[in-house]
Image 1 (cartoon, rainbow, N blue to C red):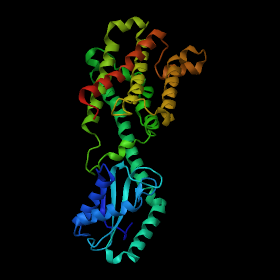
Image 2: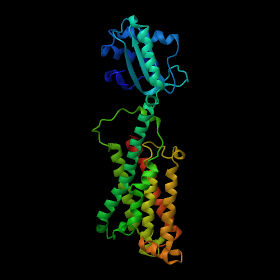
Image 3: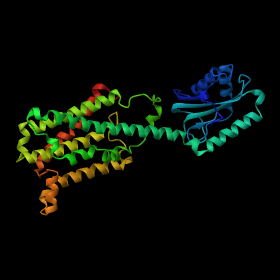
Length: 357
């Protein structure tokens, strides 16, 4: 749009709730930047044009225009609202982007047609029509990166804390037993597949622009990372040190194998938590089939690793030894998975206490 509209004529992240408020904002901006000398006259001219016929086009765009002596020189003002507003349009959809044309009465003929022609060409240009989608999906990518960071850092916090303080509790560092298996869910590849294709949310478009120097880790994000990381740490020591859980296993090797199950399932359940800052953590799962696909793959691979020794073939015994895993009873599986599931209600409780944001 270079040469067609200047930077000062672009109004982003506006908060209008009606078409009239949007036109009022455009009129005030016209007077402020020197395009017009009477904002009220410009606003009245916009309303008069709206009475003649609808100016809403398609796909959330509108082209309101006014002709009045209050306009000193022909100009275009781009208006981007934070949320769509009701605006009579050709496809009966609300509008969130308006390309306002302001023309002096003395230039109502040729200039008006020239600006309308340029506006029409831009609206038909796929590059211009994709601006809204580009912003939306750019913000979706940003949010999905944040989701992955929450997922990854919770695992990292728990792993670091457990490794650091386990010796003080008389526990041989449990995460050294299965390093490749414990690392895999949080090493970036599988987590990225699970959370990298989360669907776009309409609410992303109502968010204000972010400063370039704004930290990627917000207070709410840090609260979730610390809370859930410490909760996973607490689960680890409850499982490893409380005598009640010894009754499910015949040996220390079995219990450490079950801890492997607990840690991985905790990470998987926490993946649901990071999908939303609200309570709708299971919403739109069908729009991201990769999430459940990876979830199931990890569960099946883990079950295979833990039970590989049950298959009387040498290569499976080698796999069991490589991951230091041994089979253990179904009751142990149930205990580990039930403890891991508490990651979900605990994070919901955190959201209730500190608020969703």
